Amino acid sequence: MAAELVTKITAARAVEQTQESPFYIPMTGPAARPRRSLKHDDTFIVLDSHGDIGASAGGPDGLFNGDTRYLARLELVLDEVQPLLLGSNLRDDNSGLSVDLTNPDIYRDGRIVLPKDMLHIVRTVFLWR
Image 1 (cartoon, rainbow, N blue to C red):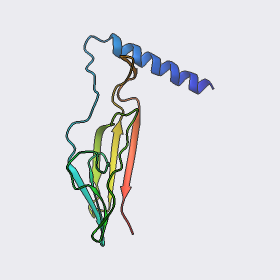
Image 2 (image 1 turned 90 degrees about the horizontal axis):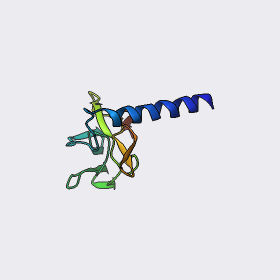
Image 3 (image 1 turned 180 degrees about the vertical axis):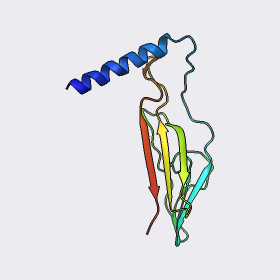
């Protein structure tokens, strides 16, 4: 209970500080998303640098085995907003992708309720059959 109260107070102070800062630059969405591909035997996956499948329109994203696409869309969103990329690493053997993300500014009724960089999200995509 005490830890939850401290977390709420810390988040409230962060919101107040960001809204009071005259130099605050809001961040609401991601930039371009380069494609990554993972492969093992006849199975491969095409996804973006965030670890999402099909989030960017017009791409050949998906999970494929042989000549069949089994998954065409898989996307992580926070309150209907895409997380911001901190960094991603592709394994040397192209079997895994590790992605570090953070939250953008989350708004409700024109006010920031969750300032950017309050959450750290780690996604790992590992392809093995």
